[in-house]
Structures are given as C-alpha cells and as structure tokens.
Image: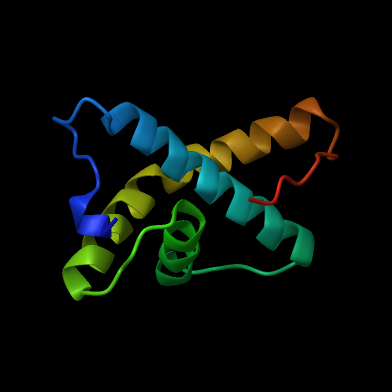
Amino acid sequence: MQASEAPTIIHPGWNQYRRRVIAAITDVEMLMQQLGKGLDSDGLTAEVAQRLGLRIDTQADFDVLSALVRAVRPIGREALRATREDQGGQFSLLLL
C-alpha cells in the first residue's frame, strides 16, 4: 500500500494504523539506542515505512507518513522511556 493511501483520522482503521506506526517508531528508536546511533525524522520515516510495508514512491507519500511520524514520535519515545524504567534499563529487542 502507498503511504498516501493509509487510513486517515476519519477511517475506522485509523487507531490500529496509528498504533502500528507508534510501535514501529518505538522499535526503531530502541534499536538506535542500542546501537548508539540516532535518526532524523526523514530516516525514521523511511524505517517506519519499511517496517510497515508501506511504499513511499512519491513526495506526497513521504510527506503524509513523515507528518504522522513527527506527530507521534514523542509517544513512541515515551513508551521507550517507560519500558526502560519498568525493566531497570533492560528490555528485549523485538525485530520485525
């Protein structure tokens, strides 16, 4: 599926799609922390697209997904922080 064809806020599948994007962001952020690296928003958008199997063939596709990634990235980071605190800095890495 093209990123620009993904569910929007008025679509019944929106919450599920949003949760999947947040989970992908959290996984990528966790991996980057374990590797001691970081990603800018563009790199994170590309990684999320790959993990979710979304095609970003056009600038419109990229822009749509990038806006969502930027909007929900703080939620993914908070989930990562909470997981790290709950598990004393240790957590398992689930690779998709």
